[in-house]
Image (cartoon, rainbow, N blue to C red; front, side, top):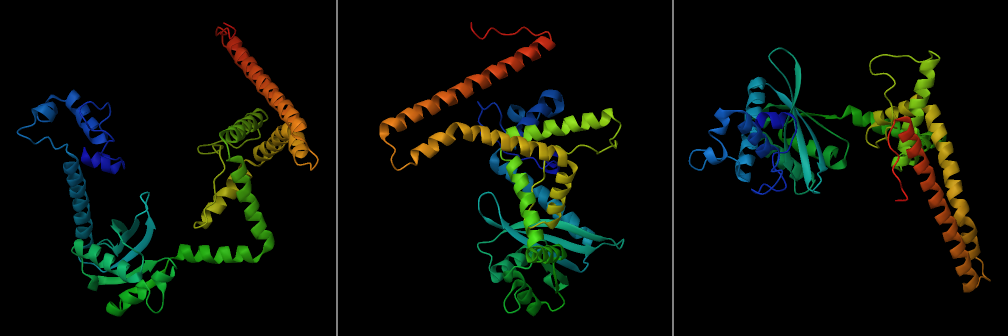
Length: 358
């Protein structure tokens, strides 16, 4: 059961694990499910557990998770069989704003295959090179590996990682000269492409515009729904005239992918999604322009009037009242339109139309 939860990446604990809680968390609820459907399990858990061995206390759950982690690490170390290894390290803060360092081991197994295995996340009080080195040595030591077997180190290009004078790679090289440093190739490519893109005004404008399109359409659920509906209409129209390539995994784009500053391939995904849904994107942008213009028409006169130097409070109050009446009219009309759509839907599907005046 513990391995199932860990394999699926599910949390063990619940927000409320008290007796009166309706949801005690994945671990306790799954254990209860097994007890309800298996007499052998029911005979040894919860109230039927021998002595005080229920194994559901928060501390016990953490110990079970740590035990599974230890077993996994032991299996990785056994597979390495005292081979030389490299480390891949990156650090970032988690949702609790604590700086965490992720460590991956890279080695060649007995079959000559290059293997990469994640071995842990280490909390670091700060990201200075000396603290990172200390944390790495502590983590490697906890796995019963020797730093003397270290033959490579790979990080990003941050100054605390690759600094020539006192960076992490330099400090490790001083003690372990065989541990050659390799700057992450994906990060190098990212830096090179960003530098080239920023050096050309047209390219920089192009990517900025593409990002703006994604942000504008993704700014509200209403706009995203409009894009999805327009895409479905285009697909249906293309199917009717037999002008659409079909197959597994095709024509499933319904949203625009956001670019990420640290992943260049995300920009490719963004451009690909815009290209795939180009016509729906244009239609939605046109609709947004018209929609914004209609909204502005209602308040534009009031905005201009209130900015006049010779405006008096009596006239201003009258203009505000008139604007409120226009907005109320829009609200009433929109509700009537919605009610009309609901009534038509009910009529087409033999559903009784509710009496809204009752």
